[in-house]
Amino acid sequence: MIELINVSFSYKGKTALEDINIKINEGEAVALIGPNGSGKSTLMKLINGIISPNKGEYLLDKKIITEKQLNNNIFSKAFHKKIGFVFQNSDTQLFCSTVYEEIAFGPRQMGILEEEVKKRVYDCLRLLNIEKLKHEAPYNLSEGEKKRVAIASVLSMNPEILTLDEPMNGIDPKGKKFLKELLLKLNASGKTIICSTHDFDYVEGIFKRAIVFSEKHRIIRDEDYGTVIKDEKFLIENNIK
Ligand SMILES: Nc1ncnc2c1ncn2[C@@H]1O[C@H](COP(=O)(O)OP(=O)(O)O)[C@@H](O)[C@H]1O
Ligand SMILES: [Mg+2]
Image (tube, rainbow, N blue to C red; front, side, top):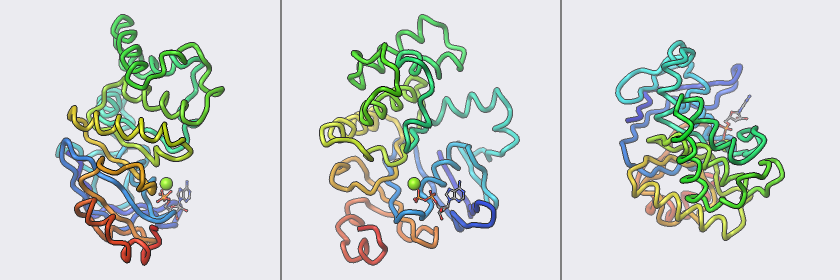
């Protein structure tokens, strides 16, 4: 469903992705691995239409995604219904006055009727186990709670593809276990999961595939997750562990 063909991206001349080729099928659970600055977050921004390739093509469901299309309101809504992004820093994602409003925001933007919005909000509050927080202001919450709200605010739009940028960062062990179980559950229910991580202890069992980026912003491995993670020598040599 996602395909990148010879994609390169640079920020004002500074390379962040170099000749990337990836194909991700529906229902996959893929980990993006690599040292700091290797391009993981940039790739996620690109897949989520926040930036567009300088070179190469991004296809979603076999259709080329262009900047022009993303600027079109109707196209953009359909696009964001398909793919959801949980940012690394929850503070850049949360901007409403209460948790309830935050989770309701996406579905309301999509034009969903208020009765259905309410149902979705409550489903997501329950799924993330944050019913108690519904009247709280997001900025008063702990990092782990913010992350749950951010995930709920994306899931309320019911995207087919869920992308998460280092979701385990700054979360306590209990929160990490909860998140792991949630990702397993979502993937089992058919959602495609794409997730950057370097917290290998808590993600055991979630991913079938690892895409590994080098310091040179290229893909150096794309294969079975377990095989990559067991290759200590490779991980150390490439500044991943
Ligand atoms: N907004 C930005 N402006 C300029 N350079 C950036 C920006 N974001 C990332 N970069 C650079 O792009 C490269 C890839 O960064 P990033 O995708 O954030 O890597 P990762 O997520 O793997 O740590 C790095 O060299 C980084 O410094
Ligand atoms: Mg990053």
